[in-house]
Image (cartoon, rainbow, N blue to C red; front, side):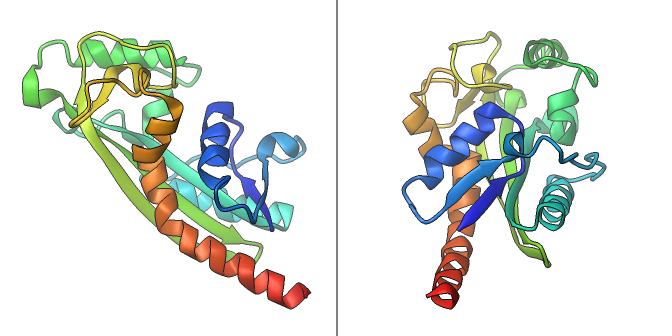
Length: 205
């Protein structure tokens, strides 16, 4: 079964591939394989709206099954920021480093439980006919006062999951992929993916 990950983010694509490889029934592509396709602007005000927008648009245009996620960091004390603006927190052309710097500045006067945060991920699965399923999951933790670790991306070097003593940027990739918000959301949608793959296999046999 051909499955397209609606992203150009190489880190995110690698994470999806790593999680899905155990299933073994998908030929996985990404938007990097479709340079002629232009993704829609992320105009949604929630992670769910953006995930559905990205999945349904790509599925219709590329005539294939598509998985799209929208995810980000939510800090309750900052009224939910960075939220859906996580990738653009400090501007449209912001780098991950710029965003982390702004977040640290925004939290500079907060301590302890005020630095609680969570990553949220919404994943939408769409076919050329429209939306098939949308799920969401969270990974809760806190924001450190200094960066730690050189792996990962985004806010990983500032985020430490509850009950862990390493940031996402310090965790081994295998461990992170087992406990992350993206993994939790993907687990919720795997049953639907496997069911669709089985149906397609039966119609082609």
